Length: 313
Image (cartoon, rainbow, N blue to C red):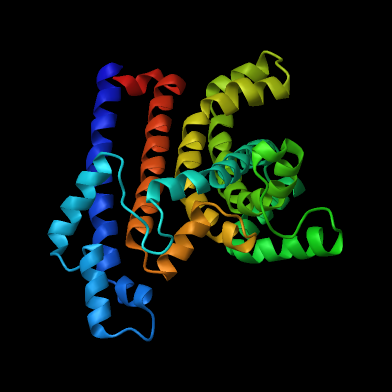
């Protein structure tokens, strides 16, 4: 068991290093100069050169990378070119809205998608199955920002149930915090529900045809008990896998959702930093997203050993 955990942890280190290299190089290979953005339209070439020297952008790319990665290992990701604050403090200020949005989205999506997918599998071919699959197709087909604007128009502008935009921190009151977060979470959960419900249906369908499920039914066990304790429990591994894969969808959706609802989180920070060519901020935020994704998938891999002990060996 511990050998398996150790191998999985060691396997994540090269992934993070590759991500760091790719993020660093992609930012510097794309057109645009942050020094020119900072200097403004009226700046001379001498002004731009001085700013580049001050930011360390006149050094070779390899040297810049090793300086950045060395400081990053010590928790120092430099100072934002645009905000004139340390990147660590920027992330600390913006991480709560993103964590809250992502957590509530996962909870909503799991509570909605797993029962829907299980019910669709149990009632295969019925109108319930067709509705669930229709919702899945819509969730995959419609972009997140379109869903967001539709929900804003209906529930915020027409019905007035929710505010149009904005975020309230948890420290300022749980009621207002939840009230402003529900609509963005539902928007982001739509794609996640589509993915998770479809996989749950497929996995449960496969298990329902197994001999031990037929045996449980022959013993006279209630259908609900057969579905939950025999079918769903044994279909959990692929469902948990999709939850992990969906984190990647969630990270991309956070950026769009925070922009639509004007939520001051890491997604919105990433968009603003990219537009401003703020290298240190973009590098740190993307590396943080990648680290979170790797850690979550590592946790899911370890969860496999609980759901299916055969994986340990």
